[in-house]
Image (spheres, rainbow over the protein chains, first blue to last red):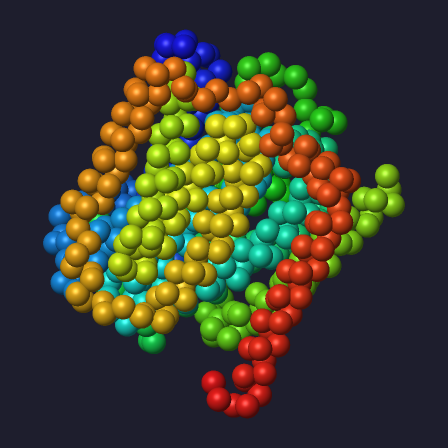
Length: 337
Length: 172
């Protein structure tokens, strides 16, 4: 079997989708940074960055250029190899998630039959970046910040998993494409609103966003796990944080808001041929943008939790609630059968 | 042919990282090699078309259990940090990766020459799917499955009890 025979049209399509998705994800991080600063300024009655380029649109490029040109400081007593590898892990895991997200009808990198579990598995690997960064820096602030971040991410993975499990029950399949197709008529947010709420909160916590951003609480931990990072290595953590905002929005869209489907679309949407693909992508990106905006909106509206409040919310509120929600949906589905 | 080569590459990586786990002097390095071992095993499962097993391998072992291991190792901080930290260099990491890859190539070449390449049978493609595993687990193996569940629950409750008991004394 030669390599050329492997290049079937199906493979080329999925490679193109994955490439396009990864390209979009990388750029969305820059756009999200710009959006965050402009929205923050709007909420706080300021102007925000408006000098670099029209409306300050070139600000992210200037920021990245600044980060690249900065001196890269590595702690002398730290572990240099792990220190260099750690920032790559969250970026790589973030990029890997695009492979199974459907952007439109047939526009999916790989239609895995365990796609939902794949998403959870890849998300759970992101913890390593944070933990190793904290450890390799050989600094007490970084280590405590890293451990705190890891504990937070592990705690909120469970309710998130249960919320996703309730979605899987409703869809009757572990394939992400099937989950989206099951929402052609009725988005799961209408059937499973508690699941959506739990998933949204857990996604905020997974991305280390306010009100769960005590990973980098300046008062007690300086900068958290990236205290000892500078230059583009810090930039990668920064990039990964905003990529996780985009991915969280994509996952909320996919699991609860019908992916690329308009509400009740099978009842009123006429057949528009090839234009359907453009419409699909627009609808998907529109929903993603809305949720990315709500991430930013929440950040500049709600104050930060204390650490014990965060743990109590995760373990003794969200987890039991998510399990009860799962059981209720399972029982209702069984009775309706 | 490609799958066989990938299998040998992944298998060599799994064995090499397992050996490295035992041989490395530092606990964190050992843990990281164990993660590499688990990821290579997940790759082997994927080659056998067992997508479900592969994903669960990463989700449970690499994603949850090893993170807790790392957690404990970092909190206890048993080693003399400074002396060991300086021994790990980029050279060693790259040489490990390259050496294992070359070893895999050699094994593949030797196995091909002596005609002892393993083949993946067609029956394997049916075994690893979610449906097949769920079917077997909840019909034929339901008793062992439930027993394991009870055992795990008992272990969790035991761990909680020990932790709570410690707290009441006010020693922690």
